[in-house]
Amino acid sequence: MSVLLHDVLVYDRSAPAGHTGPLDVLVVGDRIEMVAPHQPVPEGARVVEGRGRHLLVPGLINAHFHSPANHLKGSVRSLPLELFMLFESPSDERLAPTPREAYLRTMLGAVEMLQRGVTSVQDDAFLMPFPTPEIVDAVAQAYADSGIRATLALDQPELPEAEKLPFVAGMRRALGPRAGLLDEPAPASAGHLLEAYAHLVSTWHGAADDRIRAAVSVSAPQRVSPEYFAALDDLAERFGLPLYAHLLETKPQRTLGTEQPRFAGRSLVRYTADLGLLKPHTNVIHAVWVDDDDLDLIAEAGATIAHNPVSNLRLGSGVMPWRAAIGRGIPVALGTDEAICDDSINLWTVAKTAGLIHNVAGLDSDDWPTAAEVLDALWLGGARAQRREGELGAVRPGMLADLALLDLHTIAFTPLNDLREQLVHCEDGRDVVLTMVAGRIVAEHGHVTTVDESALLDEARELFAAKRPLVESARQASAALVPAYQGMVRAAAGTDVGFTRWVGGR
Ligand SMILES: [Zn+2]
Image (cartoon, rainbow, N blue to C red; front, side):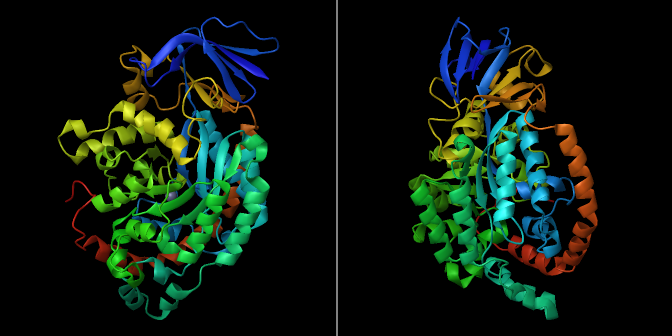
């Protein structure tokens, strides 16, 4: 199957205006074959007309995401991460999804992304209470059926709460007779989780013509043992997978160095580096409460930061030190984080937020993100995070044909003053008229072509409405834990760690 995108402007990061053309772009199989003027239409090819006023850009890459919350948008008010997590995914066995629920909720996210030109997603899926082969299959199958490119990991903690959090003595006092909760083992052991990974890698890594790949996830270094961390790193080395690690997302995590004896005063980044597990394949997710030493280590390791500015605002986590990271040459990718803390899976608005939030770091505007840097994060950083540099993130011959076609005959781009600025600050995804993944057209005019969207929404609405009372009752049970967790968050907030990542204040 071939597709000729005829008479389109083509995004080109090195062109002065940010684009070249109008040109013709020929896609054969899953790759871009040619980008040149006036191409003949190959026999049997579908022709997509650009009329000189459509812009072809690389498909957007969502570098950080958790699909299991796709059906929970808008259901939890803004709270600090440690409180938010009590309500987002209470560990209640009754909430374990059926395979159909897991399939449908994954599909909701895939559809939303494809509608807006997001062609690739890195899903750090927490399959509570623990992953089973059936649920892993349901998630991966949804990605396969939707047509999106997905890199799937299993984000599961392996240690009890008391090992993952700071100020545990105070939490025990606040919990009183319920303090034993902090010592309960995680729902799945390292052995169980490694079996789930064996299934994921053997069944799905390279599936759907290599559209589906596996990744590994430690969730966060404080949530796993060094042995399990090393076992996952070994898998990453053996199969060439990215490794996902939430690192220093919040201030309570910053205080773990002094509040958990096993970290011996070290930051979680330093701890990870000392284990020999900070590497080029590491996705350092968030990196908000990092200091200069941490950033030096990340740069030295060649790791990538996955930046999620909307989630960081929603959960009050703070502002990632953009210029300090970019200035060290650290690749930065952009992610939405989960649908319950964005609450849209819209990478365009993430890009806009990334383009704006760092301006409050100070008045030296040379330190502020440029539109070109934000777009590089979106495309090149995303490809780097996924370990698919040279295959994704640009429109040129030989690259995978993961593409989004934008109508420029729209309010966002009329008049066209500066393409890069308007892509970052004006576009919100509504002008995406066609999305292609691996050479296949998967969405057109705002709707996916791979599944029956309307039937999917009907089924999801009914099924998740029926589940809602269970979610509510699990959340009510979690509410009893809030005073203890809030005490911990407040103790961390009041701790002097030598710097801040918050802005404003009372
Ligand atoms: Zn996350």
